[in-house]
Image 1 (tube, protein in one colour):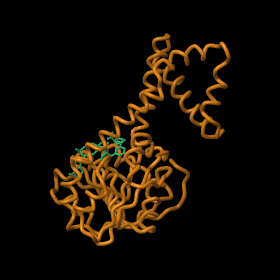
Image 2: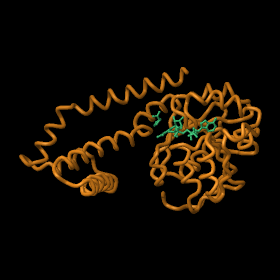
Image 3: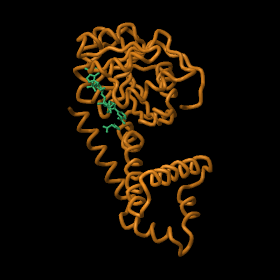
Length: 282
Ligand SMILES: NC(=O)C1=CN([C@@H]2O[C@H](COP(=O)(O)OP(=O)(O)OC[C@H]3O[C@@H](n4cnc5c(N)ncnc54)[C@H](OP(=O)(O)O)[C@@H]3O)[C@@H](O)[C@H]2O)C=CC1
Ligand SMILES: O=C(O)[C@@H]1CCC=N1
């Protein structure tokens, strides 16, 4: 979890409790966080709702059990987090529009879906803020981008910042940069896990047991990340210190450089950006 600090948030409705919704929920239910009025969470399946109902301070609703679940959850909520799949957002907004409390802040985490789409489907009495968190929220280490909507005041944005600070760091950007931010930090954990998978496979190929490989690789990623952050040094300089002239690392880096990683990551993030634009057009 992030460093415990006391924060009080108003009544929250979280619509959608999948990977991202539950990651945010872990911050909202952490020590030091008080949600006055409680947290209402909705999900499609009854099984997931039953699991969530066991969390202190959480009231869970299943849409497959109660067709009014989302409307009930948002009624009286001051912060409404929309955490369903992007393609489901328009129908969900139409469903809840008349049940929202005037002055409520609707916070989107949906990739691609624009503030204009939200504002066009919701009454003018509510405020929209768009965000892009990431799954390290589960351990209080998220990086979340937030962008103000056309009707949001500085106090609204400050409240959304406080919401996401329960799960990590927050960066404010204009909406025009939020899809780009998503290709870096929203999707970024997946890139890191892909590298972990590949290095683990190489360790097993070298004869280590899966458990040993996990210890070696996970420890190396954690140690290198902490060194990077704690030292504040340039990653290229830290890499240089590992790479003894004419040593073993130099040979490995020469092979990895054949892949032209900067160009590969530019292409990968551009592909993600294109997909965000497709989601916006849905
Ligand atoms: N995963 C990530 O790393 C990130 C995701 N996001 C965004 O978060 C959103 C959710 O993604 P993610 O959590 O990965 O997706 P999931 O599929 O894991 O979660 C979506 C959840 O919505 C529930 N759901 C479906 N229909 C409804 C409904 N009508 N009302 C309420 N809940 C419903 C689903 O229930 P059930 O499972 O029972 O069908 C499911 O739990 C997306 O918009 C995505 O772009 C943003 C940043 C990062
Ligand atoms: O893959 C996705 O669409 C979401 C948004 C960023 C991370 N996961």
